[in-house]
Image (tube, rainbow, N blue to C red; front, side, top):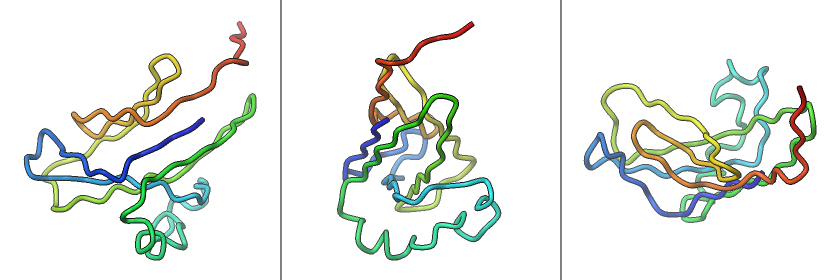
Length: 118
């Protein structure tokens, strides 16, 4: 799986004037980190200090019957009224990240060795 986000900002269509950037720290998220400050991401400040003007990318191999968790850090230029809903979706081998009504192409999943089982 490969995920890439450009250095560009995106506008949230439902909140005019609200722009956001997405970052992908390399640390691995785990369920044990869920309740921790910054979800257990120890280097968030230094990561953002060094990475604000860089594109973010992540490459992972997920083995059969395996799983992987990772961080999405989303920064807005101003607060947003209401609730933000985010998620990844797959269309063929293309990955899309959605924040409310904004869908962004962000990468690919290599499915060449995928075998569906009954």
